Length: 115
Image (tube, rainbow, N blue to C red; front, top):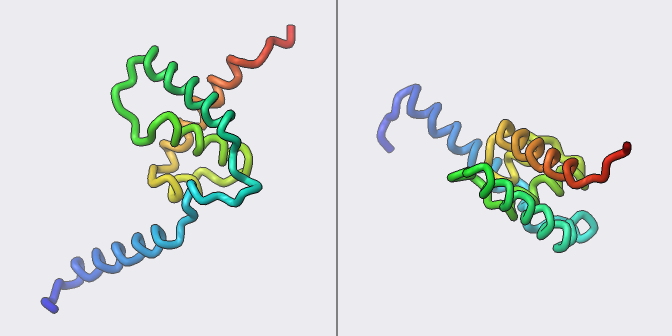
């Protein structure tokens, strides 16, 4: 094996760590049966997100509306942290924060007024 020098070996070590994290992250699609969101809830939230994206003219997102809905419902149901969700869904914690906030606002708009 060629000598990569200090910087090269550090890069290889970092890649090894990332591979281990990916190998051990929980697959969002393989949730325990008791924590799996219902298909009806997924479809409802995915529909809201799809409509919102079309109205706002959003061009591209890392996750589809269905995957975003799954991320949000897992967060609400299981209480997973944004960092855990970021690893599971292969997005940044900042993206998780935005996705959860966006869905939260859409769901809140559906709620009846208390007035």
